[in-house]
Image (cartoon, rainbow, N blue to C red; front, side, top):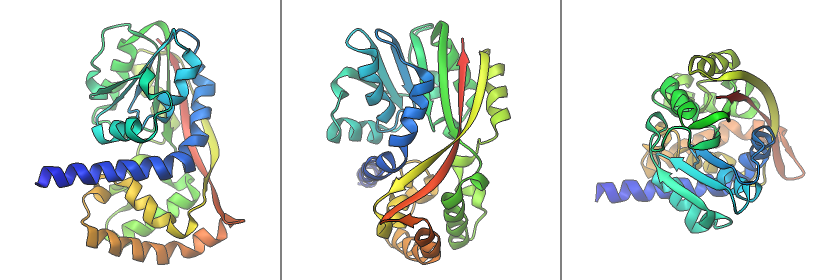
Length: 275
């Protein structure tokens, strides 16, 4: 029964992630990544930590019928959500469950590897980078996006600080999405893995949310798909957290809401590298 409840909670978090984070944040960041990845017709592409599949789905029409797109994630609920609710191009994607540190593919299998907001969550980032290089063909490219540090995230910086106060813990304990934000660290990691021509761009992109009255609630629910501290909360604790955080965040949200839409900048590093 416990496993069933856990699986149900994971699926619900993945659903909210797709319905909230993807249109609010990743619909704007995915084009930023793909403009640098430039998938070409006929290429083989692996999207590591694919989540609910926004990058993989967007890549399919770019590689065409002669291409191949594979989405890999450790969280089956994410991929199940991608296929059940958002079917555009889903039938053309190979969905694989697995770890980034041990990719279930042969050497030199792909022309391109992408990873949007996944690297910071990996248990062994260096090993994951080596694996991405291993599965690339000679001359193949990796394009990796990670958030910049929390201090550079306007609204989310305030949000995570508020949540940490409610939890009475250090912000770093729940701010995993922003835990690998130094561009020099990202560049060094890829160079050490054997990549060539490593470049890192620091980019700012607005996020846009129309559910301003439910922003805090939906952020916490969606974050349960990737932040263990949120996922571990029972319903009562989650409701209490939402209520306290909503009160604390009200002024920030009002300040950044224009014509009924919450608009605020988010900052990420995008690395490009060649095998």
